[in-house]
Length: 64
Image (spheres, rainbow, N blue to C red):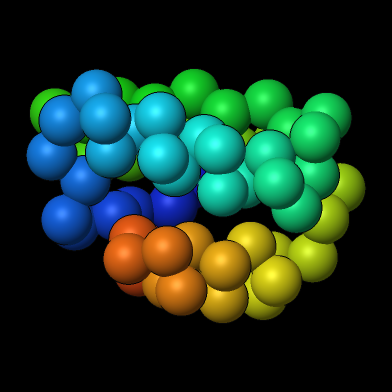
């Protein structure tokens, strides 16, 4: 799945997003393109749970 995170602007943001996702699913595969604000995500976790966690950590995301 692909997510867009509009306020992801740097490598630190990307690390934060990755950490948040992997706190929900440690086996998640996360590939981030900061310049496009795009997250390619492979996870068995519930998408809604990931979206809530990202929003709580300051990275509101929408599915593309």
